[in-house]
Length: 83
Image (cartoon, rainbow, N blue to C red; front, side, top):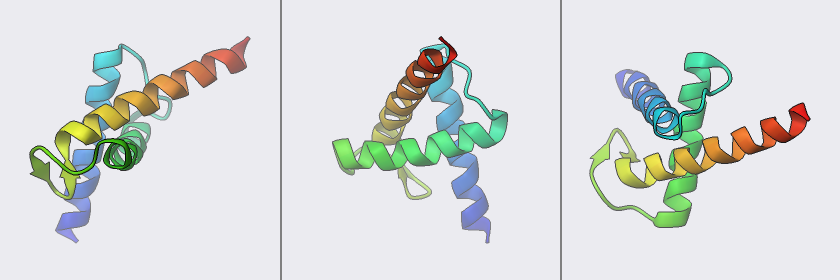
């Protein structure tokens, strides 16, 4: 149970950091950060593999890069939908 909570916390932190790096707000607040962090970690591991420091099943560097890619794509799509 505690590992699942830790998983959500690390996912949220990764999503939040990716949003800060890009200077973009993630829709959905905390839940959006958690989702972006978890999906970003999945994308990062697919694109970059498993390397770097590992915390709670997340390889931090690929997960952060994956979250940045996800938020960039999401912001591009949301911006196009507003027009």
